[in-house]
Picture (cartoon, rainbow, N blue to C red):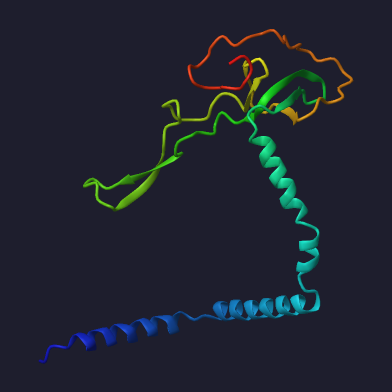
Length: 201
């Protein structure tokens, strides 16, 4: 029996794959194709009837993008003064603080949150992704829901499920807070290089 050539083997494989594709066509795939065709038709009709107002959008200077830019610049200013108001479920003001920088999540981290797990031979084959330890070397969520530094450099973390409001101007609060803030309080811990420009550092 004559051994098939390489070209004949490849051709047979292509024919087999084609047969599988044809056999795989079902009424559902046909319905999906028709639905996509209808979507394409009404999308094209809508664009022709009411075209995108590109010239007007250019003239308006893309308001939301400008607002997002302003938000990003304010948020990224380490010396920007903002205000945090902590409130109860019933709307009672619990405490309010002037802060520098911004409120942040203690669950955020400066390193990768996931690590690629390689095979036993350390080749380029990845056999899974696992959670990495946080910046402090431990796993799991941090205790606080939100954290911030006051203008005097004190770090405060609010508990989970806390209701808080952040603004870049004092809020007109008419009720007295349950906890008062001591503006002369200083942090008990200070890092050698961190928090430059924040509070008393």
